[in-house]
Length: 594
Image 1 (tube, helix red, strand yellow):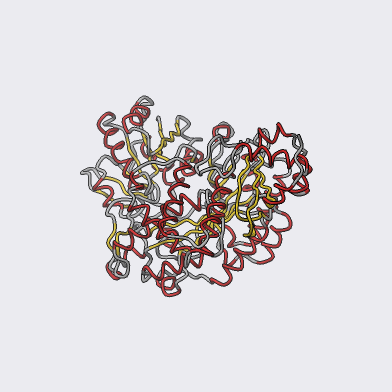
Image 2 (cartoon, one colour):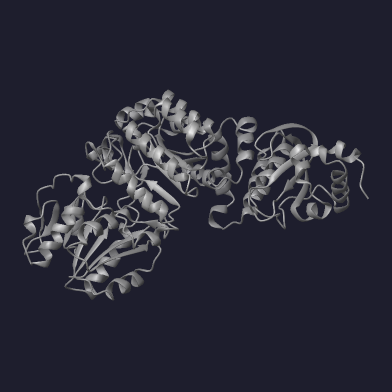
């Protein structure tokens, strides 16, 4: 019996963990099995053609909110060109409202509900023997008259019964992709907007097995591993052992990054202290769901969160300088109006972590907030991703405005293009971070920029245009910081700039000769570089700014008189550029080497 396991990933670099589990469990008894990964951008006809040429007897599709609408046309075409094939659906998107899905997707023969490894294997056994699907626990299937029938739920698996999803043949294909990994299943919390709230309890894979799988991936050349455990740190001893093991692996394989979903307000201080002392910079990345700082809202959605402890943990991790943090917000939660969400945004932005993800509530099938949608006046998309349009305290006008905040937040903060500039604007020029992003987002919309593309230079020009229209107390400082933000985005000296040069060629040449004569003007680190005049012309860019930089990455500065800014790009693109400044009057007075 020929089996195809298929899914549409959001991007090519993503690798489906679900399909690999299904394959690992089924393959010993059903070896003629192909794992086929596509993307939501692929043409449906191309996907159908690729599956068709494999002549499968059974096709299993893994379905999520991001791919279900693109998957359905593929299923419908496959039914027409392979009329006798058995089509099975599984995944979180179709595990709820199963009868509705069977009605909508008439081409589907069965849906696997929830945890699928053992259920799908049993289903294959019945297909191969023309057996009775009624004996397969945990599915919805069609009876002889095509009517949906549900069987009893299947008990949860002992996780170590499931073989490793990562085969020796498969690992080489994962080297340049994001590899999803789980050490546990389940979540101890019951947030009513999350699918994890429907299940109870947390189960763990044996820790030695987890270590073996991680070692195989790392030794196989995988560079990015993303743990999908809902709360990785709920079992502190288990989490610490994994952290310790990965730190040890780093000694021989230093180029791997591991990402974890962390509940920050329960992360023990001694874990943070351990990471501060032992974790190499860049090895770990934490994703932390804050969602809202409104206590009433959190109570409604059954979310237990101690903001004071969360803040202490985030700042503690940040102080280590070793771990990037990604914090999540959800706009549109019950009883969080525009003003409340503005406060939530400002509370979290003030922590100044590496990334702040602003998302919108999705009314997922089966979750509590969807069941209570009428109670809070929700209107939402009827098809995936089921994103909200409005509720009783957040009209559609406000949703649209927050969408504009999300847009410029992604372009200017999360993309790390203007971090220095934004920090200054938020601290000195705007009432709050939210006010900056909202005002800029509104201006962006008014100019129609959301309908046209942009290059990096355009982003800086548009920011400057907005700020000049609005008016600034210190436009010169902002422009100087924008220069620094732009220049640090290159590994080689940029050929062009977007602002009007402040130094004529003759002036720049005079300053170069002065710095050759008196390199100590730019500090000890500059002196150690020992650059020649020719090397300065080739690898340095000179400009002026109205402040002194206090570090070589340009993260701290002191406003004052005009300074010469020298940006040095190391040959070979080995690191980010370094910044050096000295007072312009000092450079002008330095003796010039002829």
